[in-house]
Length: 366
Image 1 (spheres, one colour):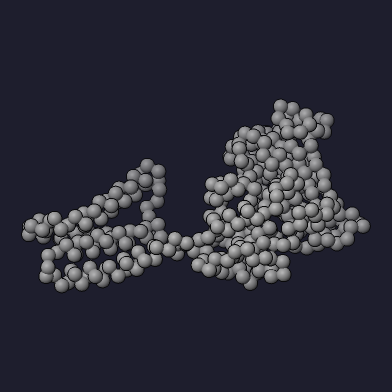
Image 2 (image 1 turned 30 degrees about the vertical axis):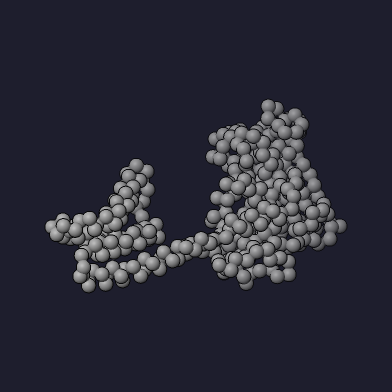
């Protein structure tokens, strides 16, 4: 890129000298416009690195300089008075990639980089209008996405107030985590569960598809277990009577209190082997996004962890400094058996700032 800029600068210098000597400097206005834009870019690169330590552009971050340099070079060559066969021919050749690039830029569906994510916004709109109602026991909707689309989802979660959407990423060759919805890209179609997934939208332009898992569409499932820890236990370590959402107190995580009692369910011996949905929720109050509470669901068999799910309260908090309901979902890919242990825990990230927890609830449904 440096050699390209130096080469264009040399051509422009020769053109300016010739124009001044021969009296056709007025033909250089388009070239000067391009040079002005280029000068502004170079100055901004320098200032950003000097003031904010922003790295200089390279590879794809400097790609836009290619058509800009081509424009400046083309404007310099066509400015030469006629006849000038070589400058005109060279300018015409340079216009070919410039026009090709311009033609591709008219596509407003996706960019070549991260092409599969081009219609993620539309897919999230579909989810927002289609998902089951949010409830106290299940306050979230889950989405498992292929890698390239997953990277842009947090932006829309914040700008569209979709804190209720909890996402996970599928990394090949792993399967998709059991979720309410799935965004499947070109490398994931071999993992589509055609027996249970319903096609919601397919983008022909990006070859990316949105599916809904019909197994979790039951609005009134059978409840196998439900327990709420209201933090009302007398003498509870870390209890706070100044912050609570129900009852008379909550739990305060700080430098002295780092954990709390878990909510636990042992699958009874008379329970048939079943596939279940395990949901955990809690009311959390945190002052900012630098410290948070993690809700963790674990499933153990014979003392060994089979699977788990966790979520950070910072990602679901709508208003910091206020109470927000946080949720986590686990849908094991295996059936529960008698003696299995399901456990919900709440853990603070650090002890730097106080965090408050109330109404920690565990629900198991089928």
